[in-house]
Length: 363
Image (cartoon, rainbow, N blue to C red; front, side, top):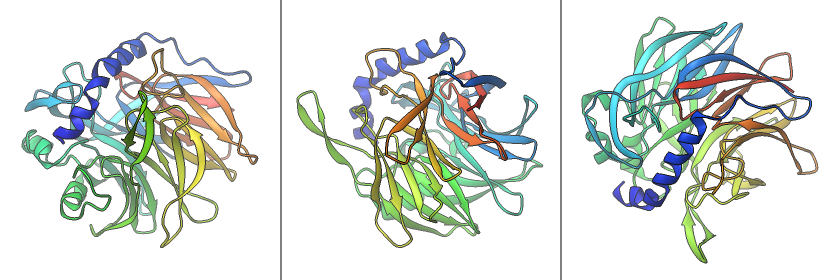
């Protein structure tokens, strides 16, 4: 992990500055013909969202805690049980289970619960991130035991560990390179969870009994940076099932976060990933709606922009063009369509402790 943290050192002040900007951005401003309403607020670094009848669940990455602490990519990082799977009904927050969260002193840049999905029997499954290797995790002590794991949660607040994804990475390292894990996007399929591991750069299948297998790996690729070529990690953050039954995986990309450098990969059963769509920037989530792919970018103008970053919700048109449906988003992190409508819920300000919100966008 040390090598990778060193690689990100030039971005620390940049991203810290972007967080300060995010705190003072006005409410989301809709594009022409789009109405945006805030329907929940007060969330701690909100990430994945999953709708159920009349309500929804949000994975909150939390705000860290009192420690143990250790150096992290964005400064001193401390652990606490402030992560949560939260049931939201009419804007009211019910944090049904507490999970590990690591964050800086002010609660920003949190790693913790990143996504949530529901099984057919009503159980909730959540990915708990880390963004580091085994040595990094050990430094957070027993409070951080469930970092880099897939967990199952009940509505009554019980939790059990399904699988340790960092242990799998340590033992197998499917994509090669640094052995680190940051389980992010999750998709339920039959009696298994399909997980995009943004740290390990792979797509995993985890059965409900905890058996892990590798479905695909996403190697780095060479990109231009400051007059030369550098390897850029794929950083897969989201996985959805397409109308054709294949998996579609979106990438955030790693440093240098080039504009239009993110891709959507198609992973057919038993096949290798193929590039299905190009020209996106810093993809954080995706969804198919009426056969059309919608892509959420955490930074439409790149995480490494010299100006103010802003997120965007894009629709991929049949001719390959991309329609920007909303540009007034501040670090959005997930989306979910409301059943029976064209409205979409978006978690916004996903790097804000206490300032995260859920928006309803009427397309």
